[in-house]
Length: 314
Image (tube, rainbow, N blue to C red; front, side):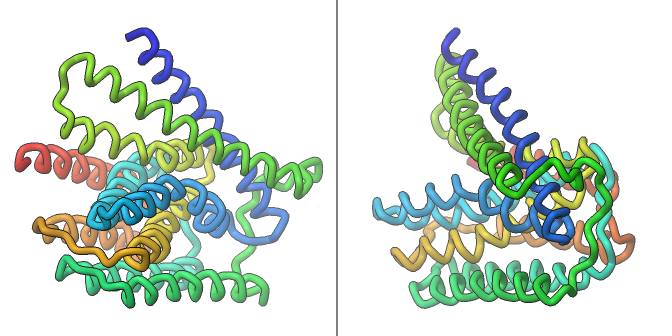
């Protein structure tokens, strides 16, 4: 029991330190390359925090359990929006420039549409996986071209990020170290939580649905909440929306390309929930150019209700 508690505490410490590193390094990179912090959050930080989902999906596909890939992606996206964006917006309202919203929101809606179109029949063929991967390559290409041509908004002023003492190699090292800390912290937290739950006699399926699912989202939680606390709301928003884009296009695309996905259970409710969780902050961004606290509260309450309902139905 003491070992489990130690793992839990070590995981929490690594998550905090890793989140701090990812946010500090990411904001420094945004300033150095003259892009908005959102872009760094949606690319560098999002890809790093989505690594656990990619690893789980590839492993499941190679082991002949490709159906886990779809559940992993949909469940992670629901947690990213409900738990993580909800918490971050409760800490501080997340602001976003109107020009950035016009550029990024169509991508978010398109990715959601592709998820619904391909997954509604509970089967994703190999050719559909290839389409998703090509779409991911297109998103990356358009993002790079947009900012190479200088069409991106100037980054938000941040004296800490624009400090000349932070060189490019140091910024990259801080980001990398932060992402490693997030990954290791999430692993330790899940391991410790599972041991404690088993010690208390919690059923295995409850551990998988609640503890492990939340634990694998801890990198995103730590990075986004730390970003919100330090006033980098755009990094938090970019991390969540970027992670969801990576999950659908890259993670699901790779998983279904390795082995076509077929799910035997009804996932209609899950797809409806991920749609509502995507559209709610999308509407507030369009109308107010921000994700206010009340939206964060609704997302968090919705996520709690979703988890309770999943456990009750199970």
